[in-house]
Image (cartoon, rainbow, N blue to C red; front, side, top):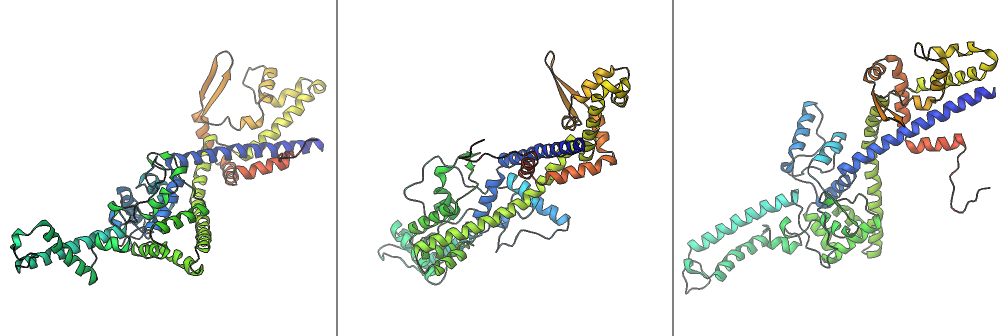
Length: 459
């Protein structure tokens, strides 16, 4: 009875250890892909760009975005990105393909890395390049310029000059400037928007004359940044630091109300929660800071849940690849372990039972091989090690000749195409989805391992 319990304990510990090691491998490969492609950082800054700078223009989509949209249309999938010129499109991916295709290889939403410390004075707030606000501002500039040119031409045709001593064609540069600016001012008073004059009055400038809200935020975080292919690598922003950064931007911008007005002019989604927090804080700056901190903390929790939902499918794909590469059949593993324990019991009884005790082992040996050498070879390799010997490539370490590589592609493919192994593969895949922390906790409970805490003493 005790021997039977020992067999099942060995089986449980062996399976748990195998699942733990393979789960660590899956987590390591996933983390390597995420870090190599900068997915976590790009995911965060795509959200910040959408929230702080507003949507990007549909015409600014990259070639990869157009290919993905074409694939969606071929698959008869309803579009997940807004593509109307008025609303623009989101930088944040709305599908698994977008996370691991659009984010890594599309337009990088992260701000450029800077080795300089945060400046004493920040540039003014401007529309983000490629955003809907910047496109509308450019269109309004062109309209205002055409209106100004038309009014100037009418004034010249009518013979209107600033200095009566000069004809219209001989006006001084200063007088020409007055003729150009005055109609624009009148147009602004009537509701027309001139890109430079009105932008400066409203606190919002074209992209080339300032920084966007997301870039101003990064400017206050760049002292803890390091470069990642010329871009920021920041993938986590503490909510308290975000709230302080918003307060700093508002202070330099002329106050919270001025910042809210200009964010609304930029069609920034951040203007609405900022206004709600400002009203709830009763215009108290300390209460506003706590309110922005709580709001951003909630947004980061929601964003983390969305990110984990996408990564979960990647873990499934990686777990399937690892299971098939090692062709780990959990059911076969259990049978191998119990069979090896039975062999060990037979060898233990060899002294009393005689050579016939080796008969069950002969089928494990090659024809003509010495049964005693075969016993040593079979039983010296635990079942836990044997389960990793079904990969297509194996290596054997020899002290004299060094590592010897072997190719077992035929046997490996035969295992994959054998329906008898598929249930074991499925069990292994499901087990890997629980993750390495789960199996480490189970291993500690089963084996009796205890984590040493600070201040604890061993007896």
